[in-house]
Length: 106
Image (cartoon, rainbow, N blue to C red; front, side):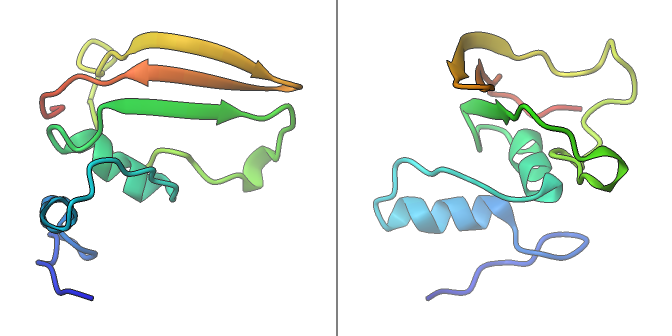
């Protein structure tokens, strides 16, 4: 167990968590979480190198939660672009893998 700095607006500071994991020898991390956590990884420079989306063959409708809850861009022109690496069919579902840029998103 360890203590890390708090992030603005609550939660923990993602760079501090990643630094602590690195100090402990962790070189690879799979993150499953809600939209706020996913958004934090996409906003912090170098925090993630790959985005893997699983799209299921079902729909929840208006009760579904967003997979990404973070303002990354104000317009479509400012929106970050990802490089498609692979698409894989998993029975009726699909896995889409993207390579992420290494700079902070606006």
